Length: 85
Image (tube, rainbow, N blue to C red):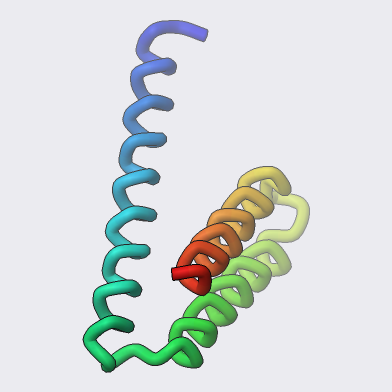
C-alpha cells in the first residue's frame, strides 16, 4: 500500500471516529436534557439499522458485504454504548 493510500485511510478513520463521538455525545446530552428519552433513541438506532439493511437489499450484488456489515456493526456498537450510559 502506498503512502497516499495510508494517509487517506488514516484520515477517513479519524473522520469516522470524530463523527461517532459527536453522535454519541449528542445522544447523551439530549437524553440528559430530558428531551430524548431512551425509547426515542432506540427507535433511531432501529431506523438506522433498517435503513442500512435496505441499502444492502437495494444494492444487491453491487454492495460490498464487509462495508455494510461494518456499518451495521457501528450502529450496534453505538447503541450498546448509549444504552449503558
